View 1 (tube, rainbow, N blue to C red):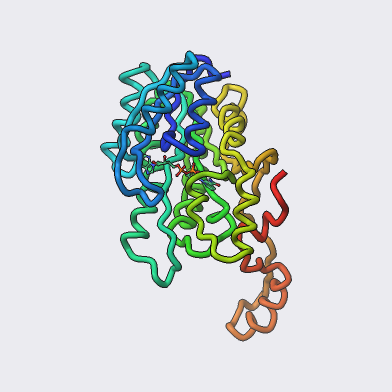
View 2: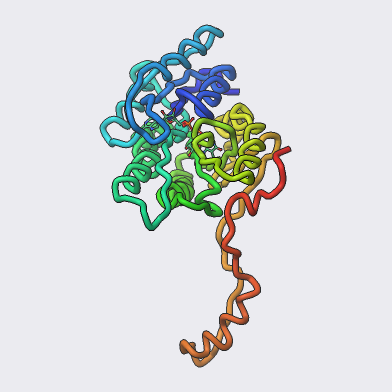
Length: 301
Ligand code: NAI
């Protein structure tokens, strides 16, 4: 399905990205395995994880090259794309998957924690996608696959930085789909649920938290890869601007924000008439202050 396509997967040294890289290679793609080899919080650097995935791909007869640049800086992001051009002569697919967590309740979150997460997720996705854009434009073909999260699409405690970045990525992906449509370039989001070291970093103090994490362990990272391979393929030319979610054997098409209910008053509104009329009319449609786990309240299938 991907014979000779050149795919860049960021953050592919472990977790979901590693399974993406292995799956892309098994479907015939030449893969740039990018990973700085950082800790979950984004600290440190290690060339090992990216090279290890390259070794695995090569051992099973596939083609891959490692890159250890950070997605979070513009020049470095350009080097990731340049690795694809220099090694394989082209670039067909960008998978914006690299990520870190710096969880903290909003009222305690530092500016540094905010910026670090925005830099890797939101800025990093823009930088790598933008670096590939001239190639996609000139060849009138290309695929963007961007990782979002229900932490942003729905909500979660203690993740203001991550939620804002991940919902920002959904908007970035839609914008790329709109702006690049005339060049046959597609852009879609995947919101995964999978047991990785990132999810393993969720604190489990209460029995309720422990039970929830046990369920999460049944969601394998490899289950996300088939959708990514499909979205990267020529078969998905008509699929763009969408947000999918994958959780073990379930695939979801996610809703996108549209007007839900409107009220109108010919003479216009005052704060008082909003209180008396507009809010009561719309209140039945308010969204609960819920989190991802409230919306996905049943066990993974
Ligand atoms: P992971 O922590 O196993 O993988 C993330 C990888 O990104 C790591 O190998 C890390 O070294 C790399 N990385 C971090 N900063 C980087 C940088 N500046 N440049 C290049 N690489 C960098 O996490 P996981 O779970 O595999 O996450 C993959 C993606 O899926 C992330 O974007 C995450 O936000 C998203 N996601 C994952 C969910 C899950 O259930 N595991 C849920 C929702 C979203």
